[in-house]
Length: 140
Image (cartoon, rainbow, N blue to C red; front, side, top):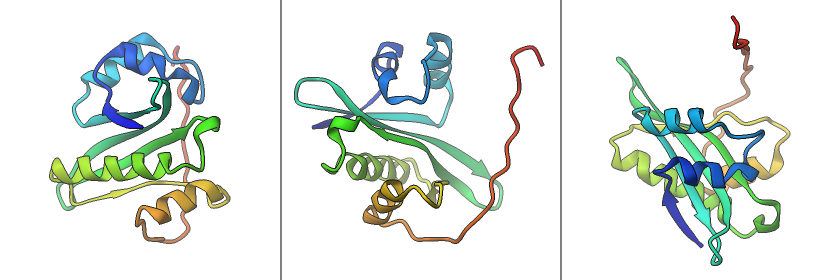
């Protein structure tokens, strides 16, 4: 397995089977152009995108730079082989290289595989929290 930073729209689109929904070329281009956005893709020996992790660097006056592990996904046929942990550790290494003071991830409390992956990569449990969201439609 090889982990590489995605630098082209084609790479992001080729990993579409790992996303929650269909990828859009314009969104992929915008992701790559945005400062602080990072996607690492794990490739199987045959070149198949076996997993990805995305992170977003955030900066705040009293916290400095932190990385949010935005999403982690591993192809079903490649799970339980350390791909998720390797991707998480690669993202954490990239965050350190960029001068981030820490990293965090929001995860559902019943997502046992994700919790185990993050725990194996050294994440500390910082307690239960509630997440609220807003969804905007394209016309509003």
